[in-house]
Image 1 (cartoon, rainbow, N blue to C red):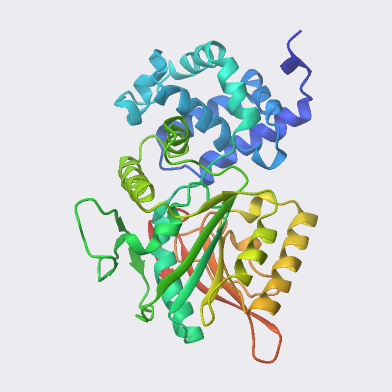
Image 2: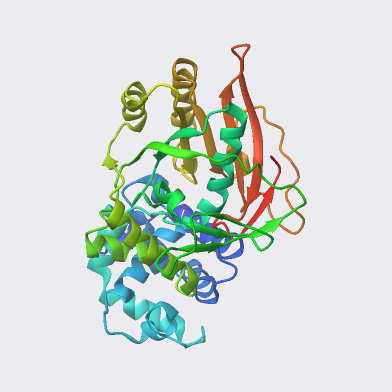
Length: 371
């Protein structure tokens, strides 16, 4: 008997709900992923693969989707590749897709299970830097310090550390580094009348940490990054390649750590005087269980009190700072799938304060600035 046959039916039902929800909330604009999620949700055989995920926070649909995509990008000869635009496929999802997916999974089962057991989904979306740039400008204006130090918690390949090397086109105006053929240009729709402060800033120090950072020199690791992108989004794929080239050239420091906040504490002690430290995380806190998140918040609060640290978060609205009022989501957008950008800092009276900077698309396609 296959171990998958022993998967409790309650787990299968829960995973089926997750896949159906993922199709609606997370990837509604990717026809292939919508179809794959629906097929997986209807297949106990495919749902049972999720039982092999070793780390519970990673038991999410996008991990299996990335595992499948990686095998396609690796050049495995199979008719499933015809559905993937990332390898030149032009076939739209059709009635044959389900059978093709099942055959592919059976053929590639050992490698797929290896990914599910050992891999984690990696967010390498420099589109979020289109919000990070004005957020850092707002922090410089708020603190009166133009010299900043950026600590990216859950950095993956560390591409956000290159925020000052990218160009940003908001339609009405541009920000960032000067345009150049080799430089990534991130298009972001600026919504609302408010504009960010234009306070200049400089990164005097930067560091990224991750449980499993990606070595941008390792082609297998880079293929996994590409696999974590939606197959149809060729703009993001091109941006990723350009950002990887920048990362290889600049070699911003990225560390593999188990206790990121311990690393942050040491890093803070070594910063030059007059530099404003900023802790940044984007779509990371969802991987904490409730007790771990409470402990994380408490530890960061201690660092904020001791080192005047600012905490910049881009997470779902449900993970906003405790007690912070939720502003209305932009018209036509869902608060569940958008990013809410918040800042926490120590006020002059010694109390912690928090405020909202912006709503944005999870991948930075649009930005509604609140300031």
